[in-house]
Amino acid sequence: MNDRLKALTDAGVSIWLDDLSRERLVSGNLAQLVKDSGVVGVTTNPTIFASALANGEQYAEQIKTLKASGADIDKVVFELTTTDVQQGCDVLRGVYDATNGVDGRVSIEVEPGAARDTGYTIELAQKLWDRVDRPNALIKIPATEEGLPAIAASIAKGISINVTLIFSLERYRGVMDAYLYGLEQADAEGRDLSEIQSVASFFVSRVDTEVDRRLPEGSPLRGTAAIANARLAYEAYEEVFGSDRFKALEAKGANTQRPLWASTGVKDPNFPDTMYVTELVVANTVNTMPEKTLDAVADHGEIRGDRVHNTYEESRDAIAALEREGISYDEVVKVLEDEGLEKFDASWKELLETVSTELDKA
Image: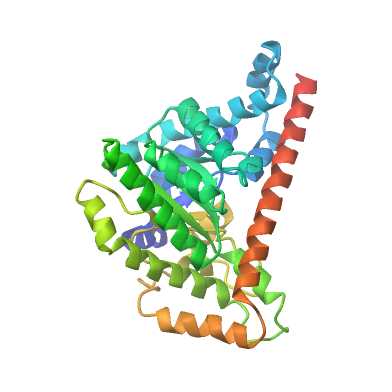
């Protein structure tokens, strides 16, 4: 493995790829990234699938078969995406076995329209879990207020969950509480807690994008919010998973819900293109990267060990400094959650349109 990527892995960071396509699967590219680049997991979302379908010829045969069977567009999307995730899980099964189920995971998200509907989210999570039918799948559920009880209910059923679209520390605590409550319910129902895994996807770069557009050019506070926010999330993680409540579950085989740093591609060209990786190095975390960021880390990322512990006061000061500039943390994270859901909705529509076009060609 590349020395820089190995150093990242040795520091306790699991490298996941934020991308999946039939082309990666068929060509062996994903298997190669697992072998050579230390990739031990994959995340997907509607945007990724829309891009894969728009740019790939590998879906044509399955689309033709589904069309001939009379499948409607929703059924076609469901089958195409779950097939990719199944195959991705199979590629990563060796990693899953070698890590006792911690890594080797492939995530698939409930459709965005369910984000504000608890019951529908629970139904879709079960449907996706059953269809993919792989122990190393993760079902992605957005961390909306309506999503929290769906997360707890799905965990209680023994479904492994990737909680996505987390921006605020308060909501993150709600996510961890939902996970623990779900584990407690699973335990009450006699489930094997050791088989349930979860990660909490805490979004990073979008925080800087939203905060920095509110700051004047040249402000020393630009590029400080996202990393401070993520570091404080790790402090919350340590507190919750060091609690007596979790220790009682851990004694029964429960796993921690690792923080997953998401949205780690750098959007501002004035910042180092690896900063949301190198500045968030700490044990028991996942960093899911677009391939461009993965390549940048492999090429010139400076891995300097733990960059999170002993930064909590500094991080609180960074958030306080923004408040003094009139930038409301609560307003920023609310805007980001709403925008995140809107982006997922737009991507889902794009995915449906892309599939509709392909169906017309088939």
